[in-house]
Length: 196
Image (cartoon, rainbow, N blue to C red; front, top):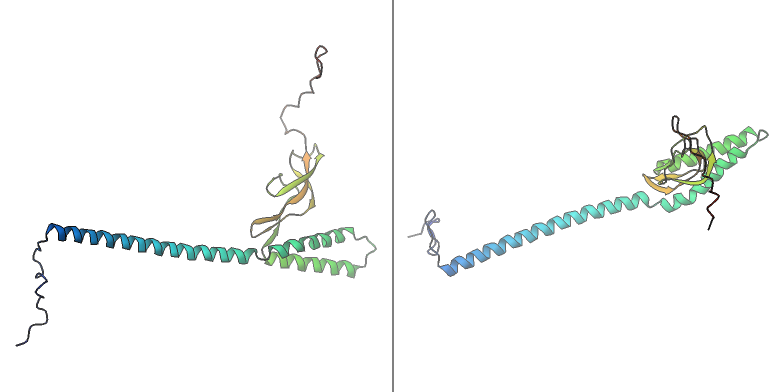
């Protein structure tokens, strides 16, 4: 005679019936359940840490790739400056072919740098910003608002939004804004006081 396949084993209680445990068995089962929950929590935390590490490594890799050319780009900026200065210095007697050739090379260099994420910082006519401009001189200009850039001496650049060279600029030391009271004249020292 064969036993049915689904007959409960002698050590297992039938389904749907209450099981009685001794206090020791209950404590042991509770401890095992707590250990299992703690193991699951450690596993989930380790899995989250692994995912975060993968994301961090990918971000670091992408940033490395984006900025890997920074050193080369920094070394090309003086060449770009030289081209721009040379074009400004050309006189009327310079052959048109020479001027056209220099303009073409300058445009190609600018285009190549732009494709790599290099952008020129706008300076002339802009308010002075110490984050991206470096003032090398203040110029008396009553016709221009105070702290406005009146001349760019050397262009500044960013690479993918990161500053790689500040703009060297001349800044207006202008008149007070319209409607503002004029500055009082400097105080005259009192005859009874002495400079120390």
